[in-house]
Length: 229
Ligand SMILES: C[S@@+](CC[C@H](N)C(=O)[O-])C[C@H]1O[C@@H](n2cnc3c(N)ncnc32)[C@H](O)[C@@H]1O
Image (cartoon, rainbow, N blue to C red; front, side, top):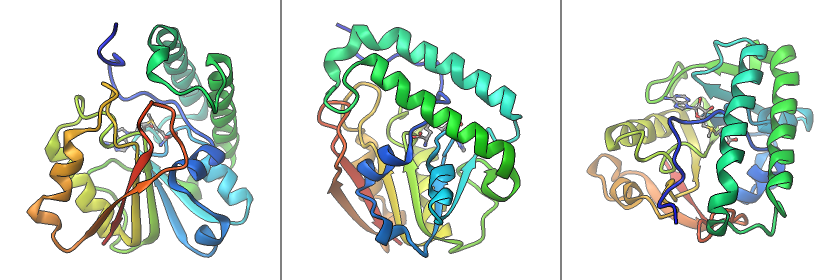
């Protein structure tokens, strides 16, 4: 039995608006009128779909220097790698939402297609080529910042210093709430960095709350971290 989901690096696969809303219990009422950042948005279609609904969302990622064609092909390679491994570790996942790996692939392909179409049309205003931990954004530029599938998940690729500096940056650029999901790593266990961040003396002014998520793909990964700056 595999001990972890073995990935060479952080991969460029994306999720949809529907999946984000489930992960972070987002409602239209909560999002309406807010300046929102999808931090590490990658090839997710959250920003594209949200703007289509009249919401004010930008996405930040250090891959946005690449062309639509380059991102499409990198994401296709990464998705194929992920799918080639998923069946042998399928028991670590709860398949109620996706049904099976074909259903999962469909969501990832829909996300990529939605992202690529919008990236071709609205790259300059919506997709900001910037890297964590230090971004180009001004202090308090966003009301809400959402981070899906980057911090905590990749705790073997990204060290504690990166995690703490990135949380500090998210808090600097956000006025109301930072949300991070999942809290589990690629070993399908809660990352030890979650408690370490919550107890870090750098963040004594911030209010941390672990909240129940409406989404659970990795078994047990049904929580997200809410941080009020
Ligand atoms: C697994 S993908 C998740 C994408 C999206 N948030 C979602 O859940 O669908 C992780 C993303 O984080 C981005 N990323 C990794 N390290 C980063 C960094 N230092 N600064 C900005 N983005 C980064 C990657 O380029 C990739 O697009």
